[in-house]
Image (cartoon, rainbow, N blue to C red; front, top):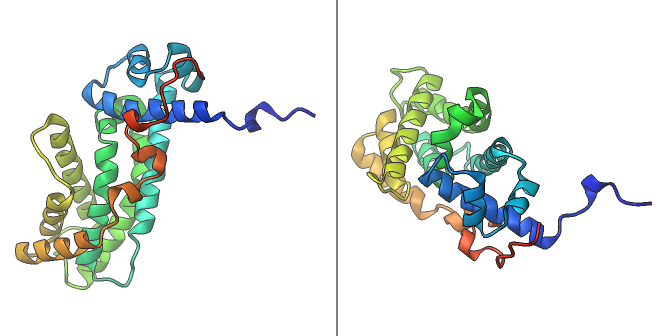
Length: 233
C-alpha cells in the first residue's frame, strides 16, 4: 500500500531549500518588506517553481516565518524559567533570552500588523507576555520593582520599549547584543542603574550563546546552508 502523500518525508534537498528560503526571507524582508517572491527566489538561489512549491504565496511564507518565530520564542521562554531566583535577575535573563529571538525576527515587526494581523501577533507573543507579567508581579510583591503600574501594564510597556529598540536596530541607528536593552528594561522596572548593570553583567555571563539558543536550521546563515541547487524542490 502506498504511503499517504502527507506522510512522505521531504527529501534532504527539499528540506534544506525550505530552510534556506526562510533564512533568506528573514534577511531580505528586513531590507525590503515589499520584496517579491520572484526576487526572494533569486536571493535564495532557487528557481521560482521551487519557492512556490514550498510557499504558494506571500501569506504562506509569512505564516511559516511567524510559526518559526513562535516556536523559537516558546523555547526561549521555557529556557528562562527559574522561579526561585530574584525577580531582577529573572527579568534580566528573560530580556537577554528574548533579544536574539527579536533580533532574528525583527523584520516581522514591519510586517506584523499589516500582513499577519493583531490577533496572530498577540498569539505569537502570548508566552512571553505571560512570563514577563509573572516576573514583574513577583518583583513588585518583593519590593524589587516599583508598583506604580499594574504588572501586565508594566510588562506591556517593557515590551513596547524592546520593540522600539529593535526597530532602531532595523534603521541602523542602534546596535546591541541585548545587554543595553536588558539594563534599560531593569531601570524602567524600577531597579537602580548601578544595580541593573551588575545584575545584567552577571546574567549575561551565564547566558546561552545564540548559536545554542535557536534551532540549528534557524541559526544557519543562508550562505552556509546546503549547497545551492536551483533545480531541486
